[in-house]
Amino acid sequence: MLELYQFQHSSFCLKVRLGLEAKKLTYRIVEIKPGIGQLQIFKLSGQKQLPVLKDGENVISDSTAIIEYLEKITKEPSLVPKDPKEAAIVEMIEDWADTALAKSVRLELIKAASMDPLLREALLPESFPGSLKNLVNTLPFELINGVNEIINTNQSQQLLDSLKKISKSVSVNQYLVGNSLTIADLAVAAQLSLLCFPFSSGKRLYHKGCPGFADNPQLKDLFDWRDELEEKLFEKDPATL
Ligand SMILES: N[C@@H](CCC(=O)N[C@@H](CS)C(=O)NCC(=O)O)C(=O)O
Image 1 (spheres, helix red, strand yellow):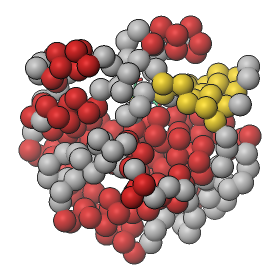
Image 2 (spheres, rainbow, N blue to C red):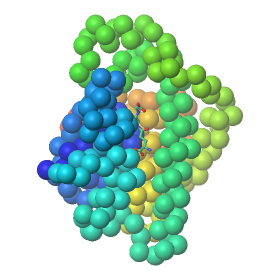
Image 3 (cartoon, protein in one colour):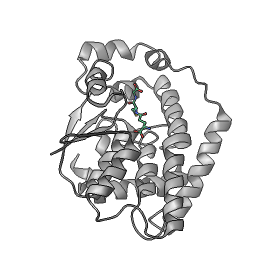
Image 4 (tube, rainbow, N blue to C red):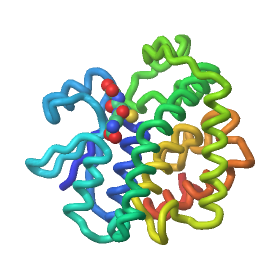
């Protein structure tokens, strides 16, 4: 059976889970503890980042490479349009989501978590002992992650402006490119999880997120689109959380 090594709240790992679900593949999740657990990942894949997919002898790291692999082993439904122009746009959107968008949403989440101890605590893996969670609660989030990046309001505004445009687009057409689900949808939906957590993040985090985004009425269509996409792929009703 396929094995997905992941961090519970990683947007890149969610992107791969969405791909596995879209392809209706059966898989087992192996939850990795940040830090110590990554030694196992290094031994397995020669690098320490997650997600990593293991399919028998094949070990693949990087969400883009993993989805390419899934595309190879399971042709239908294809997540890449047949039309070359659409395929190129899908690839560009995926690349944007995995780089610029991923960086912006991560910074927003760090800012939100530095101001909200409950959000910080909810983000730690379920498997962390209670006492450690309490300790982490008292520390600034930036220190824990060694993050020195500074977020300014201009960056937040730029992110908001881009997302408002995407929100309008998905309120007219449910797919970002063409008329069927593509990797572009998966990549963007996955990164949005850090701004407003989806139901797959669990009860503690569902619809929590970054102020100014998760609670922004102008982004309602966008997060509704993301929720619908998740519901369809995971075949679960958030009401059953
Ligand atoms: N380009 C990679 C990015 C993966 C990535 O950034 N993974 C993060 C979790 S979201 C990670 O493993 N961070 C731990 C580390 O860098 O040590 C992908 O698409 O899979």
